[in-house]
Length: 439
Ligand code: ATP
Ligand code: MG
Image (cartoon, rainbow, N blue to C red; front, side):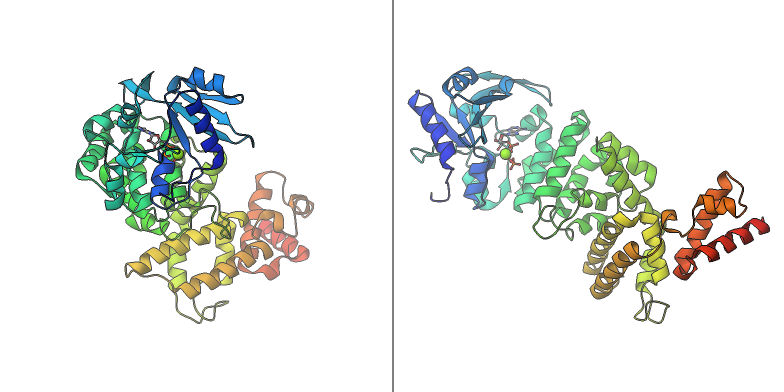
């Protein structure tokens, strides 16, 4: 069992509990991940000591979730380790459990969600306690409920989403009775709090290397329909695109944490995306960013696809594809700072199309256009603030104060986007005067 290697700080906590006459076992995610050969830093302990005992035994503790038996114990480096009292779930209403302490290890393992999460390891004797054959399911690559699947899902509907996540994260199948219970949970998922649903979606995007299948499973189980209705009917290529967007936080691939989420909404109507993201309690900033990308794709997507598929010869793009003027227009619509993300989302979408034999520009063209787009977005005038005139200049040239100033600036920007050479003071003032005369 060389792979089960809890850090020394965790061993010290376990030793101390043992010396005081209590049991202390490593349980849950870390044991599972270690048996799969994945490193995991969160080694949680389960113990026969009550939270009061734990707080008495250790000098520095944090009451993480006393009602559920969880005390955080700080090690000498100030790192927190969760120590949770063996417990029984007494009553459950599909959302919250009321718990009772004084359970045995086996009882504690029996209230856990999946067999692969119900394996305990004694770091002193190296004994593995695995009453539900979690190691066998790890070997076969199966997500299976502990005990009666329907019953377990009824106790806590979050388990349905957790099950979908674990399956995709490890590339496992879902055992049939567990899958049926997940599907039967769908109509009840609305009872989960928005925060927990958001957290599961985010964890799926952050933990699962290729989340397309996870989202397809959310859809076929009915979870999307229940929790994020507009995505239930979203085109599959959007889900497929997720697999072409790297995990957020990977070294050397800086990207916004919500880029993958933006892929899910890419092309959705502005209002529908906005309502959905707010209901899920996404921050204003994340919501606005995702909605903007979605909206620009909805309005310009067909034109972007067509331009990128165009044959050679067009102005500014001798090899075919989008012209500089088009890139300026797209950058202006989506905004300078979102232009690169806008392109990454397109690139992922086209990769997904290419993989299924659909029409998509070549990878080479997509990559070279990415470079052009970013260069153009930061070099050319694509916003009113980039114009060589401002409102005061226009008023001085005879444009009446009021809305006419804004609309004239917009029209000038359109001209500059078409032809950056126009962005000179005298030329713009001249054009403004002419526009004014033609009114
Ligand atoms: P992750 O790597 O995502 O943290 P994890 O398995 O460690 O996975 P946690 O949410 O940290 O998941 O929970 C730790 C352990 O607590 C689980 O392994 C499982 O045994 C148990 N557990 C967590 N949530 C539930 C639940 N909703 N129902 C039953 N048991 C649960
Ligand atoms: Mg964990």
